[in-house]
Image (cartoon, rainbow, N blue to C red; front, side):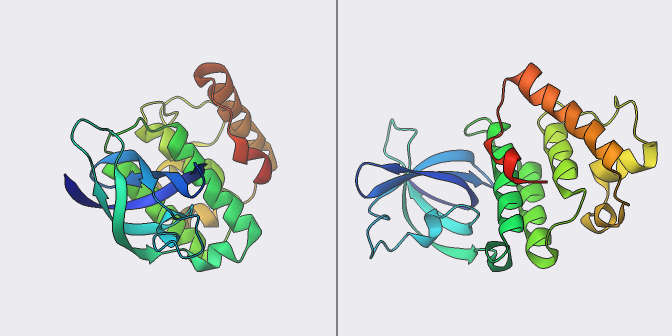
Length: 208
């Protein structure tokens, strides 16, 4: 079976000598583990489509009886060039992708989560990092994954808390820096990811 879908690369890892296993979060089919054959060769024609933090229009082939599609073609829609030229932005983009990856079951479509990630990457690509982006993005993914704190937080002021969860990225960027509130939220997230979900976010150490 051949099918096409829009997708964002969340992560990649080597397979054998020349291939890659690439985690692609697609709009209609959810999170897929995809085999990209020969992309580690210098002339690998699908190499760009297999790179992390890439948005593309993909064509997949799925063999009958298999859950492991092979990428057979596609086109790159964006590599988020301004993100890649700024290390702080690149780390944050990779953190976005890891949060989505860890909180998204395989082959479980979530157009809202896909739209959130794509919008956040476009915002980061256009305007760079800002103080509250990481917390706002994580809280929103948790909300979409069914673990949200939107109605239960005790501490942050209500309008501020609502902006983190539902305000535009422009509104989030306009929020004043508040180290005490940031530490409170980070502690809440750390306890939930580590204590409740048993998830270790490896990219967290690289982002502010």
